Length: 314
Image (cartoon, rainbow, N blue to C red; front, side):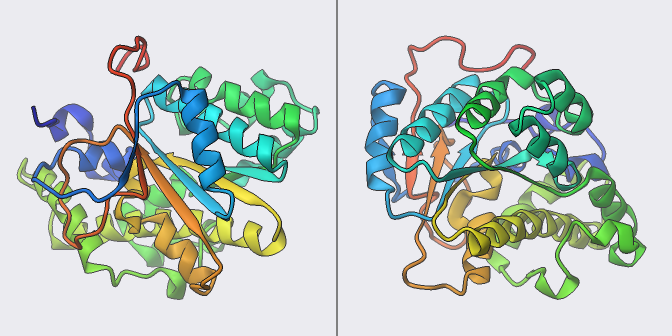
């Protein structure tokens, strides 16, 4: 049976808030048949699958693990994959959409043992700025601290996305712009990506909201979000040539490569020796595919008999 979701049920919010919702769950509201050429990771224990993938990904500089934020099984699998990668290469970094860029210092202090977990949550304003249950990500942060894995705060400050959505680029001051790429590095030319997101926007507009100007801002904010995360990843890669980066982000930033992956590749110069791999956990059976690409390099299907797949309150 085709999976389908109501946009209203997923994001019953104004457009300005919609822009900072989980883009993958938004994308799941649109359903059309699509041929998926991705490799599928068969149902086995997460640890066994993780070790197999780690061996296959030994040459990858960046690995994207596209999640649904409130699905606990995704986070358990992410931890298993990170552990398997780190077992074969100690130089692994974790890049997280869940933290906004101004709070990198708090993460570094936690990794150094200068903050405890409660202080990390408080000083990154995690509950207000992300809000999904802390225990979804806490085991990953604990592992990063124990193994001293660099952990990168990727996300745009929410104040910036809200201001941009409401008032446009010219409303941003120097303080706002210090955490985002320059305007000339924000590439809006991907028409397939725009078409994918237009359907999301139009569902909202049908409820009596929005205009063509709002659509432009909607797309701009999404791309800014992607470009900001890509910039931080690329900066780390340039400074740490022997590291492998594992990116934890909503699947909407990963599918078809339109979000973060293509923008990291552009920043790295599209070098032939630069390898990236993408994985999406339990994608819907259909998703619009304007450009005809595979949804990701790998699809991880959770064992349907497993319990506790989604967080409480979903």
